[in-house]
Length: 293
Image 1 (cartoon, rainbow, N blue to C red):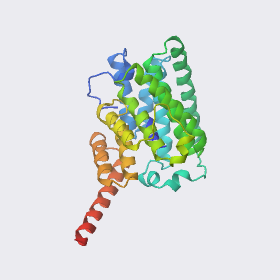
Image 2: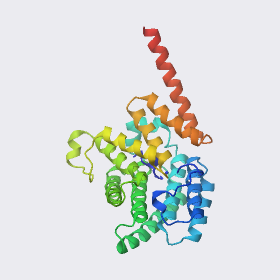
Image 3: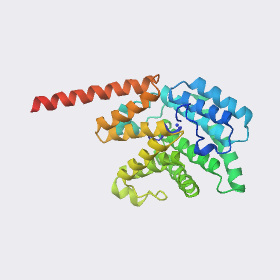
Image 4: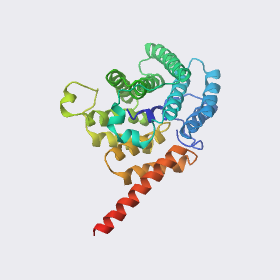
């Protein structure tokens, strides 16, 4: 479920000169526009992110990437509005499993699913012509992950969300076979590995993910690849690692990744607040350990 910090959902700083793996063939201006969208997303400046996407779509109405990014912004916006991005939520399994359906914003929901549908229709048309189209495979990976996140976290339909988790993983595996250096996709494969590894052993007999063994350490390793070498999702991978290390009761590691994220996006109010909580927890533990000596 934590992949929502997916989606989008999910960019290096604007000064990086290299084209991201998913935008080969894009002009420098187009690449800059997509980077601006992700940059604003990671700062939680959602209106600014939407405006950047609008500029890209106006120039490239037939590119599935713009609609996938817009969907990611919409999901982040809704999760932030519902306070589902806070550390306490992901640390408490009962909150995640809580069957009480939340009250989604109907306008954001419509925006999210309309753009997912548009992105997938364009991506599938491209894949029908070229099954190795990395941009299309990337968009299918992302949008299936977005469906999973919304179903699991907002609609509380956890069983239904697994279908989209598996589909997202399948597209990610296909993409990495075409381009093993498409490092953003390691967010998906790492998340899938960690998710399956977090399930009770007997459930793994019934829930299968392509090219996934359910090894949590391997999941963390893949996420660290994305956090080090990724492009659009490099900051997102840092958030996922912070969440997973928090769940493993390793606050020092969690704080380390939040610090890296905050260094890139100091304006983000949620990350600043969550890091402060972690620093207080670490200080409290250290004080307790000193008293016990």
